[in-house]
Length: 90
Picture 1 (tube, rainbow, N blue to C red):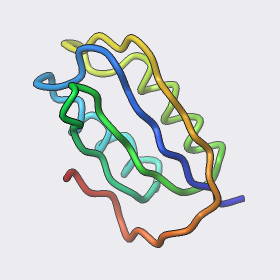
Picture 2: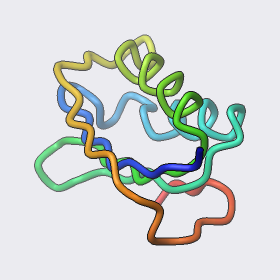
Picture 3: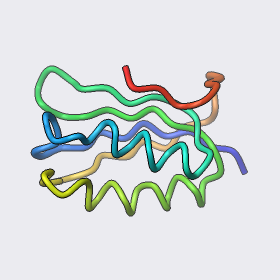
């Protein structure tokens, strides 16, 4: 089943290669969407694909790249209301 999610990653996640880390894992899993930095220091991910694959990505996000320190994830599951082609770093 195709679903969508908005994920906010909090912690030391900017300036540590986190967006590229998300890009690599999302594209490897065949997920679509985008990732971008938020002004307050968090990273936001808009993603859609198979729920099980998104959950696999979430497991990776909890760890993050070596230099990151993930404090919390806020996940909002949504119905698919936009069409992404591929995955982009914004």
